[in-house]
Length: 402
Image (cartoon, rainbow, N blue to C red; front, side, top):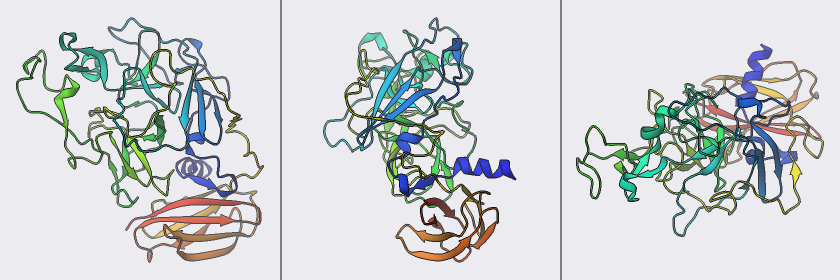
């Protein structure tokens, strides 16, 4: 039972109203707090997360904790990159000229590994017209986790980082697995069917369609050497053909952002094979701060006052979340609330919807005692279970699905 409750807690999101500044762009990183090492004994995952009111600074060596390699037909070796990236806490849509996802890192996975775009850096006859798709031309050098090192030792993924999260779990909303350099989150392959957070969990589908022509203007004909799909220009965005926009994202409600956020999604097919544009489209959705991209980037100098985030300690104000779990979630009839032993007595539990309308209240909730609520009369949708005491407050997102 304890293991089951713990696994549920890892999936559910608790929002600390008493410590609202600890938002997902701060807390979603896999921080190495125990000195673990990865490839070639290099410290793995994210080394440190620091934040200000405006930005989050992520320090990482670009080495994951999972086993990587070997890399067929790739002579490069992963090395310590000593990166410091800056992620804005207030991302905004870019309404000006599109900002292309250039070569090199375009974002960072939650374990500190770099995200690259769909290209491999070369084009047909070096003409800069038909750009080679990295999955097709370099896929042979991807390891079992679908990553490989670049010249200079930067280990990265162009496509779905399959060892970072469970890409076979099609029953739960995927977690945040990274952030793009415009500040918007990147989720795994699965999300709510509807942008308002309702409907079943579905695999997010790209809206890029593989072309059907047999000749390419100023490029090679479609043949065995240059099949359709080997260049990124072989794909055309067709609005409405999938779930996502031209940047491979959408504005939607997610478990981490119950009020909604623009979010990118990794795209794979039903066999889990990566689908173009894989992570982020040819252009970012938002604006991009300087220092993260271009030659010599990824070594941002911090010039503002920051606070180090410590995931093993209580928040700065000393107020921790009320440890609890709700299951099953989603629920179609009964849902059980269980407050962990040792928590405060006489907790008030209140269920409300997205509009703030209250549906029921349970007073004097005690720890270590399961409380069952009948959800059958509530319409399908997203609800919030507020748990409060005199000094603490926690909110849990609950999904009702009939």
